[in-house]
Length: 271
Ligand code: 13P
Ligand code: ZN
Image (cartoon, rainbow, N blue to C red; front, side):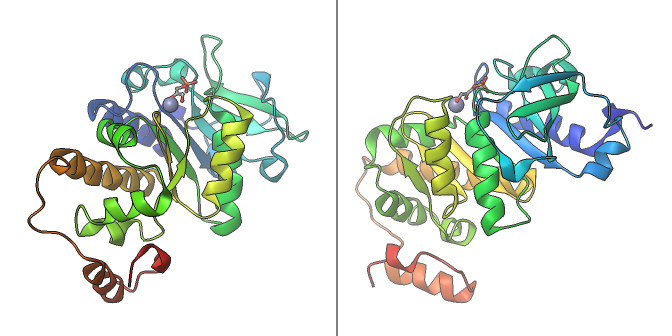
C-alpha cells in the first residue's frame, strides 16, 4: 500500500486550500471543497474495506452511491490543512443506503464533513447530469464578489452582464454566466437543493451576502472559474463609483463569442 501523504489528490487539496487562504477567500473555517476521486487510485493508498466510522448525511444521494470524495471538515481552517491534512480533511464513500458517509481516512480528531455537504453532493449530482467529467465543487468567500452582492442587483442576467463587461476574458472563461441565490440560511438541505438546481445550468452560483460556488472537472479549472469572477468583481468594485470612459459593449462580447466559438448565454446580450 502506498503512503496516502504522497497521493497527488491529497497534495493538490493541500496546495489549493493554502492558495485560497492566502488570497483571503477562506477566513477562519470559511469555505469548503469536495473532490470526487477515482476508486482504483484511492485503492492504491487505502484499504477500501476498512471503514473507520459511519456518519449520517441527513439527505439521500442515490446517484452518488459508492462514489468516493475527499472533503474539507466542518469548522476546520483552510489555513491549517497543508500542515495537518489528517485532522482537517476526510475521505468518504457514499454507502449503499445513500444516506450514510463511510469515513475511509481523515478527521482523526473526531471531526466530520463540511456543514455544506448537502450543497456539495446535490451539486455533484446536478453537474454530473450535464457533464460526466465533473469532479469538483468548491465554495469560498472572496472579498470583492461578496462586496458586489451588497451593492449590485442580484439578478442573473444583470450580474453576469456586469461581470462580462469588467474585462475581456470574463465571457471567455464563463460563457454560461453566473447563477444567483438570494440570501438563505447556509448549511441546510434547502440551500443545497437551490444551489443544485442552479448548477444544472451554471458552473458558478453566487450566494447573496455569503460567497460563491464553483464546479469543474478538476481543482484547477474550478479555482480558475472563481478566480476570474473575483477578478471581474475587483474591477467592478474599484470603478463602480467612477465615471466610465471606456466600456466593453454587447457587440464586443458577441465578437469575442464568435472568435472563441463560445457556447454562451445569447439571451444575456442586448443585440
Ligand atoms: P464549514 O466549516 O462547515 O465547512 O462551513 C464553512 C462555510 O463556509 C459555510 O458556508
Ligand atoms: Zn460559506
